[in-house]
Image 1 (cartoon, helix red, strand yellow):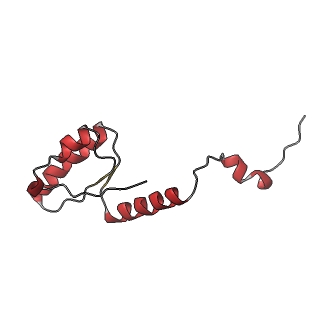
Image 2 (tube, helix red, strand yellow):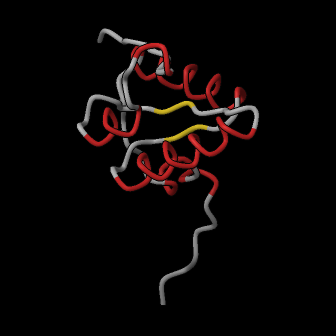
Image 3 (cartoon, helix red, strand yellow):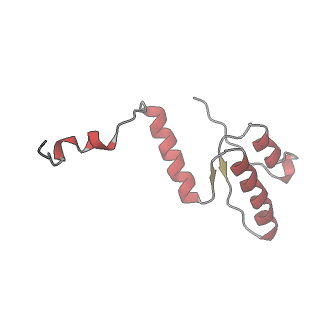
Length: 96
């Protein structure tokens, strides 16, 4: 699975909200600084929410997501119910 990372800014002439709306963005990391970027960030976060795109707002969240994505790529995903994890430790109630 190839990953592409891009910083969208004024110099590129690309509108982040349009990219999100068009489905070209699959994950947003938005950590604005300053008054202008905060207003832009609100529009970006709103677009991400409306279009179902995950949006991270801290460096810690971005690092955790990157670690999770890397682990997901390295291991097959499985679903296990909580009861299976604790099956041997469960209290067995008598059937009456």
